[in-house]
Amino acid sequence: MEADIREKLVAFTERHAAEQLQFLIDLSRQNSYTYNKAGTDRLAELILSKIGGLFPSHRVAEQAEVGNHHVLSSAAGRKSICVLGHMDTVFPPEHPFRDCRLEGDRLHGPGTGDMKAGLATIVYAILALKEAGLFEAIPLTIVLGGDEEVGSVTSRPVYEAERGNALACLVIEGAGPAGEIVVSRNGKA
Image (cartoon, rainbow, N blue to C red; front, top):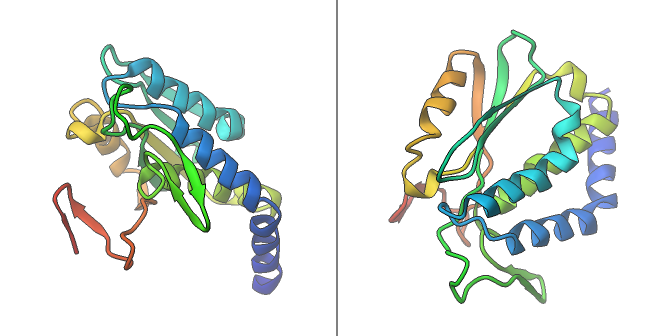
């Protein structure tokens, strides 16, 4: 049984690798500087266009200055696996680092080694679970914040509200070139 599930997930990943890469490029090219509310909200729309319809519950914490925060859940009151992510980046729209390009096997662009890569991974992992027939069996809560790069001032209460219902919390954010994990803005472990 486990081997069959693994085969289905691997097959999905292989079949959709180019599509996932293009989705990451699209996410990277969408400027989502923390205070570019319209851009961050547009990034949320890109994500929701892929997975929003799969979740029976979708709550939005509307914001005035930063992108809205989103909580998608299939848990229906049960404890769930909570997957956290942020949609904002540090680069304002006029910053020179705003394009995304593939050079050999390396992708260069805002968020491609950071949370936008994580967001693409979250989206395609959910789609893989759906195709493998596992999505409905796993209680999931996805929390997408819009202001992590400035300290999660308005998203922190949204993240914390989900803490009590979580079996586990996962942050699917990119690692450093040598596999280091980010532990703070100015350091790696």
